[in-house]
Amino acid sequence: MESFIYSLPFRLFGIFLLLGWSLLVGRKVLYPDSWPRLSGRSTLGISFLLFIGFRLLYAPDREQNVDTSTWIATALTVGKAEDPLSTLLNYSDGRPLAVLPLAIAELVGIPLDYRITDFMGVLLWCLTLWLFWRILKTYLAEETAVVLVWLPILILSTVWNHDFGSYNTEIMGNLWLITGLFWILRFNTWSIPSALAIGFWLGCLPFVKFQTVPMGLVLGLFTAWKLYRTRRFISLPVLVGAALLPVLLLFLYYSSRDDLESFWGDYFSNYFVYSYTTQYSALSTSDRFSPVRIVRYLFHSYQINLFWVGVFGGILLGVWRLIRRPVFRSTDQTERLWLGAIWLVASFYAALQAGNNYTHYLLFLIFPGLFLLAVLYEIHGFSGNWKGVGISLGLVVVQASVNGYFRKPLPVHPGEPLFQAVSAEIQRRSQPDDGLVVWGYVDRLFVYARRPMGYRASDTFWVYYPTSTQPFRMNEFLSDLEHNQPHLLVDAMTPRISMFADDAFEFENFPAIKTYIDRHYQLVKTVEDVRIFERKEEERNK
Image (cartoon, rainbow, N blue to C red; front, side, top):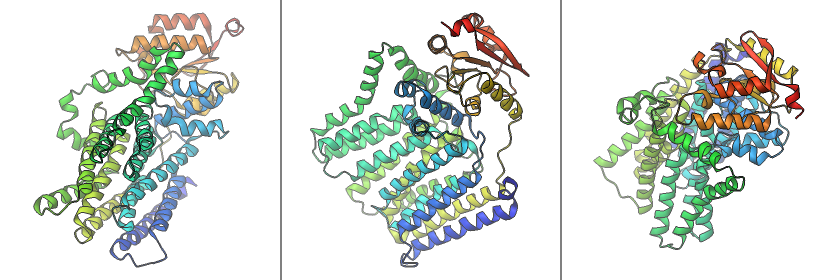
């Protein structure tokens, strides 16, 4: 099957299918009355079916990105937990709401693998894009709104840079932001319940992904401005209080368990160190935001370059036309123009702040870019937009065609035989509910072996990597080992299968951890250069 779908004739068939549909979608913008039975809703529905079909067809049942394995490991641990809520909060790397859909799937009995997880990610994308289309069609013709939604579908259907396309927390982050924007723009009464709901929703963003907070602040300030402009002054403190409520509730939850150290450490201090120090990136603040780095980061993958040219080129053209020939703008249009611009700046800030060029961070630029482009289309009207719409669509179609032509199968990891051998040994020496700890950065072992995490992270990177949070992480690691008493501990600190493997990170170099393992575990199997330790029988019987 793989050789067939990656054969040149089949890839060309896929390219022509997307090209033909793109021409139809573009024609509907120029001639809205053509194909009268094909409404905007129907066009969008068929676009979603194409998106789902392409992604299902090319989704490999192998790890595309290590983060996907991380979230599957968390979900299956929640699914096997006696206290799912506590496990979700503590074993999700501070992002419980981002893992929630996968955790629900495991809780209802759906065993996740990479294909199912990718499918769930595509469904979440469809929901996000549908909400975004509903926002856009309030201000634009349905057909133009469909084109703007079709642009990211084209890229997400054909990109095979797996850091950009695989399941990650940006998917839920975008869904949370777009849902919030949908409510903000749709609520007209601005009653106290509306302010309460929007505030609480935006206040949950740190627990989707802390990186979304700048964008959430922009949406929150826009909401506050709308309340101020409509003289709904009593709703302003309600909005602010509701936004703080999720943090307060989680603070009270951890306080009731006498575990505030985990609350601050897992949810806040780690992300502060990651984003605002040079402990995870040597780049200075000025280098992180330098124009040269921004351009290089934005265009570092040839699989998405023309998408950014189409979107940001359209924005620059629209702004230039607005400056050259000012047109009348309503108050609402001016507000949305500023919202789109500030939202885009905040998204760039969020992607750049940590100083790491991970491609999946760029997913946060898609919707503010398209929203700002849509506002400019609305201001200039159809007569000044149809050429711009056609150019943007044409560029993205070319990008999708290039992606489809050069699409390659996901390469098999050189360590795959070792992954399989270690996973088989884990399954042979443990029961399905027995906890597993992996020393190293090999999250896929949890997915292959289907064993729950015995430590609150699926890898021990935070424990052995030298940062200011290392003492806290080491104490947390030892505490989890003592509390959970995981049945197996796998030492996978080998460059053959572990990321960031180094002799300095061997557990023997950390006296407290070595002492604990020597006291409570015994070596029972060595699979090539991977050691498997089992908890001593007298320890299991305690």
